[in-house]
Amino acid sequence: DAKTTQPPSMDCAEGRAANLPCNHSTISGNEYVYWYRQIHSQGPQYIIHGLKNNETNEMASLIITEDRKSSTLILPHATLRDTAVYYCIVRSSGTYKYIFGTGTRLKVLA
Amino acid sequence: GAGVSQTPSNKVTEKGKYVELRCDPISGHTALYWYRQSLGQGPEFLIYFQGTGAADDSGLPNDRFFAVRPEGSVSTLKIQRTERGDSAVYLCASSLNPAGSGNTIYFGEGSWLTVV
Image (cartoon, rainbow over all chains, first blue to last red; front, top):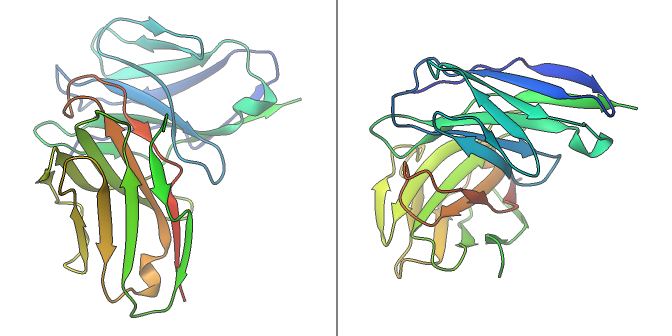
């Protein structure tokens, strides 16, 4: 199965950029990397996804390394509302399963 | 509706009872997923539908769990003879096109199941 590895927790000062890393060294060549976040007792909220190129939307930027074995989610100006658990997920090649790891618990500090 | 809708949002049931959880995907979405999330864990895959058929049910934990999607839209997850270990949040998600196509996958708010 494809697997993702993320640090269990991170702190970030309000207004600063939050950089959340993810290792997905077993990703296959045509699989996308997705990022979601989950605020307590809510369903996962979509943030961004990408294949090879860096991506940016109104919520975040996604930087994918050239070998595609890791990526970084960037929240450019973190706010207290960004406190959540962040998951990067990939699909297990040849299956329909998108695999969640244990995620990174981001705490934005005032 | 605008998003994936799940009902009930909360369900408390007694051990041994039968439970149905419903998912209304975003209109027009052909792909539908069920996940289960226990406290402090990431969501775990249960089953994937492409249209009416279950293309991958390898995540269903045992034969007490079953899911259907008879008309290719609404799906129902059915749990027979519930056990306390079934207590979790059951999440449904949908996307426009099949898994692997790079479409955004949208999740519902989940159905919180507590078996007492």
